[in-house]
Picture 1: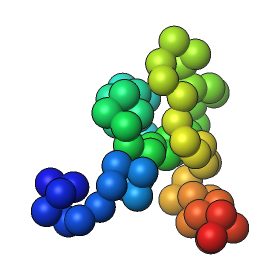
Picture 2: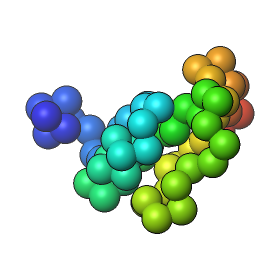
Picture 3: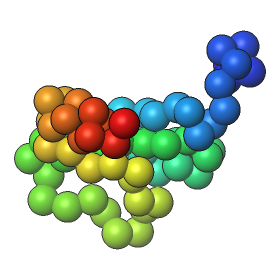
Picture 4: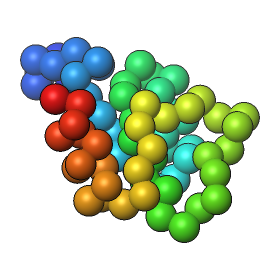
Length: 67
């Protein structure tokens, strides 16, 4: 699908609230943002996310600052 969209894995960011989704995306070479919501911490035994945000608004602010 990335090839069809003419994107590299580094240009893609999965956004998820479930650590297992973030872990899978990171293992596949994609960027991944974990939306913390009310979780206390990201599980240390999983591949760490590219970004951590409290909610979608916080993620948007962090992405805007990065560019």
